[in-house]
Image (cartoon, helix red, strand yellow):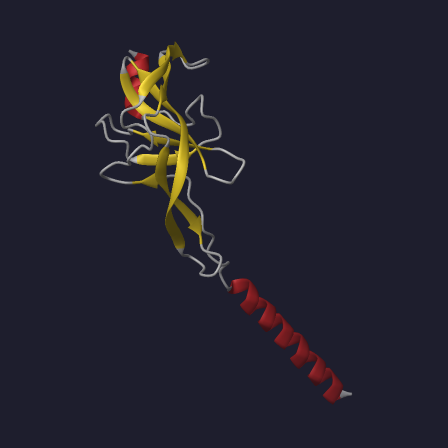
Length: 167
């Protein structure tokens, strides 16, 4: 009887210690990011030699903000893509891929462009992607790149642009 109780106490204690060890281990790192920063600025695909496709127009719901649609001179371009590695936890993988640029969208306030939106596709895939390049400090360098939900309204507005709008 005492031997059975002692064995039961040892088993229960071992299970409690094991469950404590498992719960004390940190979760596996999660790979995720919302934007990419490049100090020298990103090359905006399709912007070189692009011509105005549609006249500058006000962005609905964004007072003082305007949009100009540009048509790229060359649709063939490349873009860097980033993805979390499935094989190596914590590793971010990068690759250059060939793309076809649809249109380029220039967003400005007071004639000062603060963001470019790019719509692009990949040959053989029936989908399009939208990315934005932001000038976050008014320097003319588009240092922040984000994937966006909408190509018509930037998800983010830099502080220097908010100040221009407030004037």
